[in-house]
Image 1 (cartoon, rainbow, N blue to C red):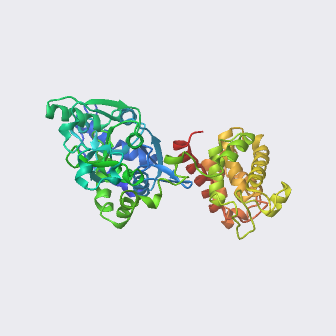
Image 2: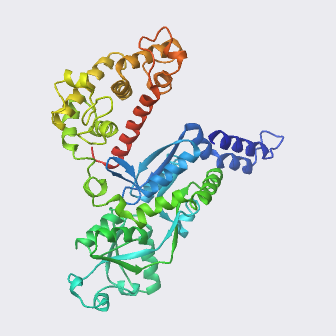
Length: 475
C-alpha cells in the first residue's frame, strides 16, 4: 500500500506541466511540489505523527494498554498507510496549531470542531462524527426527591439567554469560548467567560463536585461523563450540530485526498462503528471509574509503587519497566507460561533460582529478582554499547531471547557490515532473521536457531507502550 501511494504521488508530479525554462518555475509548480510534501514525508519516514489530547474519550491508558477514540482511529489510518503512529499530547489547540505549522506534526486529532475561524487556519478532513456544544450544569441537590421532571427543570438553565451574567468556565483556546462570545452578541448581554487551563472533562468533574457552576462540552463527551457523574445535566444545547474532523496544514492536498478517501470507506464500516460505540455508546466497556483507568486514577497497575522504588536501582524509567511487566504477565502476579516462567517478570526457573525466588515468592520479590536480572544484562552490554537508550534495546532483547542469541546477532551484524552496537536496522535485522538457515547456520553463530521475530516485536512493543505511558502517566 505504501509503495503504491508513493507511486501515485510521483506519477501526479510527472504529469504536472513544466516550463522549458528551468529558471522560471511558476508559482503553481512550486505550490504543487509543496502540496505533496506531508504525505510523502510520512511514507518515507515510516511514521504518522499526530497531536491528540489526553482524556477518557480520545486517548488514555486502560489496564496497561493505550486506548481512546482518536487513538484507535489514528492507529487504523496509520495501518492503512503502512506506517507507525507517534502521538504528541497537547491540551491547548493553539500550541498544537503551532506544531502543525512548524511541520512537527502531520495531523491534529483532538476532537476539533470545524468552525469558520479555524477553516481559515487549517484544512480539515471529512468529518469523523457530529456533535453539538452543550451546557454542563449541576442538578439541584435534592433532585432525586423531587416528584416531577418539571420541578427539576425549573432549577436548570434551558434557554441560553439565561446565561446572561453567569460565570462559565471553558478550556483555554477552545471553540467553546468562541461560541459563548458569539452567543453574547446574539443575546445583547454579557456572559463571564473564564478560560481555564484544564480539559473539558476536568471542568465537568469540577461542576459535578460543586467547585464551579457551569462549563461547556461537546455533547458526545458530556453524555459519556454523565454516566459517571449522574448529578450533572447536559441537555441544554448551545450550538447547532457541528462536524468533528482532523486538521492538517493548508494546501496539504495529497494528504487530505488520501485521508478523505480512507475516511469515506472506513467510517461506513463495522470497525469504525465498533470503535465509536465502545467510547460513546457503551463507554462502561472501558470503565472510566476503573482503578487502572489512567484518567481517573493516574495509575498503570497495582504494582506502580514497587516498580517506582526498584527501577531506580536499574537506572531505568519505572514506566519502561512497567511496560516490560505488562508484556510479560499483563500485570498478573500468578501468571505461568507453558515454559515454566512465573510471576510478574516471568522468570524462568533457572534464573529465578539464581536470584533466590520461586513459586512461593511474593510479587514484590519477583520484581526485585527480575530487576536484578535486567541489571546484570545491562552490565554485560555497558562496555560495548555506550549509549544508555540504545543499550536498553539490547537488554530487552536479551531478556526475551537470551543474551547468547543477541551476541550471535551482533556477530552477524559485524560480518555483514552493519554496526554491532546499534539496534535499529543493524543488530535487530539479524535477530529478526535468526530463524533463517542462511543466518543461523553461519559460522559466526554459536547458538543456532532463534525465533527472532518474537524478540524483535518484543522490543518494539515494549518501547512503543512505554511512549504511551510517558505521554499520560507522570514520571
